[in-house]
Length: 165
Image (cartoon, rainbow, N blue to C red; front, side, top):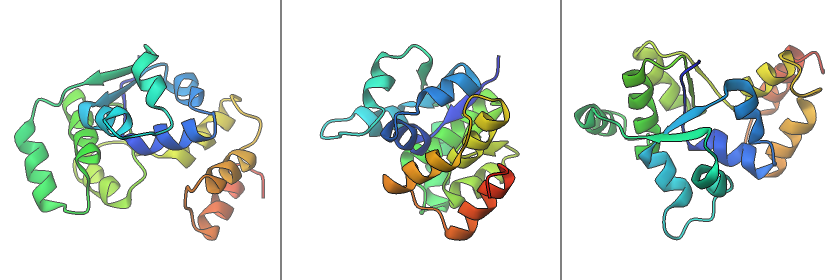
């Protein structure tokens, strides 16, 4: 079975458009660090995906063990939030097959650690390639309508990769 670690972005954005099931269809199970879970279900939060994180067995929460690595990355990469850093460190610790992360700064750190990563849009492309969804354009448009920002150039590039442009 693949080991897939996710940060918060994929869960909240896919849940916001009622497509969180795509992560399960693609990967079977995803692992999230405690900081991601806390972002989703912590006091005063109302994030899409919170219920799934609390009730779905295919979303597993694991604690990061290398706390010093988390602290070091937080100091050296101030643009990253606790949840992003914990996702990166957990993926590193578990030798994950894939880290799902969208933030550029997080991807840069993941790359320096030799991690393989994808994001929400990469997942949509994989879902189309595996015939889980018939098209990515309506999903991308729904993401954008729910506040997921992508540049027009990236939207065009993704649609070209999906043979939808």
